[in-house]
Length: 116
Length: 115
Image 1 (cartoon, each protein chain N blue to C red):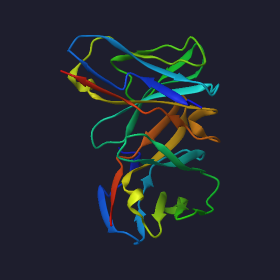
Image 2 (image 1 turned 120 degrees about the horizontal axis):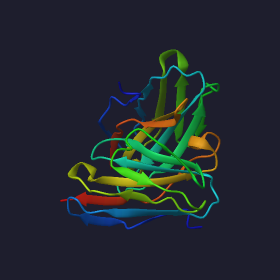
Image 3 (image 1 turned 180 degrees about the vertical axis):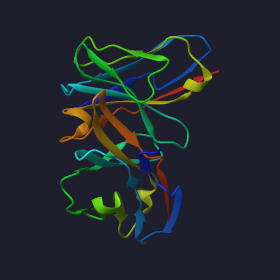
Image 4 (image 1 turned 180 degrees about the horizontal axis):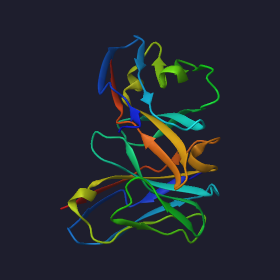
């Protein structure tokens, strides 16, 4: 079973539009961490945000905002007033502790294209 | 700061060849990780290390080996390259496990093709 689901494979928006990237996760742990990473066309991975399971407070960082809802196991990411430079693949990830060691699961990514 | 450095950036191997992907970090991080990213997919954890001399399997360890003789270096070895190992490999490091309080820092990736 997929631990992290990003149902949107590709999204295209026109510059200055708002866009929300969905992330649904699955875990039985009470302590876990959620992440968003950006992978621009150049290929490197850029850390955006990390959330622990005990902090459901939404966060805003400039044009980026994140909505964490444990009740629906979702950790959605919104870009306000999108820009061409936001074009990238965005990955949601889950980190949970196991008796055999910690595991880190990535979603399959959402490819965002911002059209000028 | 160099951060996490991976070498080589690109490599083509023949089936059955072996090679070592190098990863070095200069941030004195205890935790290091190897991931693979298949086309159109997310990252899968291959191996990780919580400190020098200590390694553990991730989600997809088969066909790979790692060692961690120093804090700085975490090489990934492919002993008998197979086409299924064609992928982009990312090395990462973090101050605490799985970036719980500090984020993971990623290298630029190694693009490996097995023909």
